[in-house]
Image (cartoon, rainbow, N blue to C red):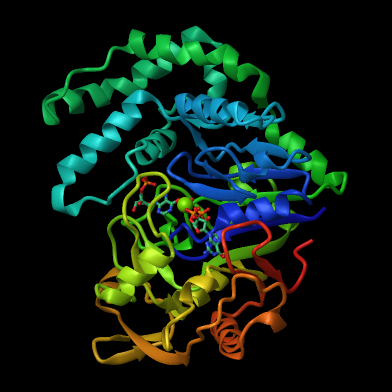
Length: 427
Ligand code: GDP
Ligand code: IMO
Ligand code: MG
């Protein structure tokens, strides 16, 4: 019953899409368990580049069944435009399964996301504006709309009424917007019902049966550990649990089934949106990382904030996820620096702190304590084995492994599938 979780160990965009796609050829199922189309996962196959938002990256591997689990929030218009886009490029998407318990991102959830951010002004989170937070809020408030609700018009109407009751008060009286008509929303949602039907399944049953039959299931996280609603830099987080436990609740698979948890870790750090980021750079090094690493958001096109590697965060990711392995990505981007600073601890109000402080105030005051590691200038993008890397690059990887608390089992040296050094097999 090999069940692997693959998740972001930092603030997202670590290269989860590439890593998932790499394993996709050897696994039977790839499952998204949280988040929605706030994600942007890039997969490069030969000269083809795909940007996946809602669909699991396994959709590009013909032998693999892609699954959208109950913990995901689904915007049906995005789903169909993503499916159509892939179909036009010759990708077969017919095996996709979607949980009937997954919640729907309705048009009013998208509206509420945007107006809330506008209303927050300087205090905004910098969300992707895709309606993620308001949809999870409706789920927790028990006024959410699930995919299965599309198959009973009268229930759907009652639920949309309940959801809009308070929202329309807010929209008209606080946000100065027009009220949203229940009938219009119901009508739009019903247009998706029949198109969705072939994909809707009891995914919990499917996945547990598959594990009983020794099939290999890979859970693909969206976002990252520090964006987790419970374990991230709250309130500057997303509204779901990208951490390993989220795979269990978001797919209905017990923790005893998970055999491996792989943290995807960028060789430096990036973040999109607001919130604290101790190693953030505002100088030409930050600019260079952004330029060489093409650090621009796949979903929103925003420039990513860039900084040096932060070992405190990596250790934290190891702990809260129970990581068994790391997949270190984008090592090639660091080629050319004479020395590479790595944050080994923080200084908070004059004291050295080795672990991530649980207090938000302390984290906002954290200053990175750097150790300088020698860099390398050789092109490493063709390296196939660890031994092919220059000594200083090998030492950089070993130092990160030592500081981060789990073995680095693969190293990315370029965006392509084959631009990967595999050290320990994941399967
Ligand atoms: P995700 O959200 O975690 O899937 O990551 P994104 O796709 O948002 O961002 C990662 C970017 O880095 C994408 O453009 C990938 O094609 C690219 N990438 C992934 N691994 C590597 C690597 O090892 N080297 C380089 N140069 N690029 C990589
Ligand atoms: P992938 O899967 C990076 C960030 C947003 C914002 C915060 C909340 O590609 O790594 P939301 O729209 O989720 O309510 O926004 O979370 N964010 C991401 N940052 N990568 C992502 O996904 C992200 N998904 C959300 O920028 O700061
Ligand atoms: Mg991304």
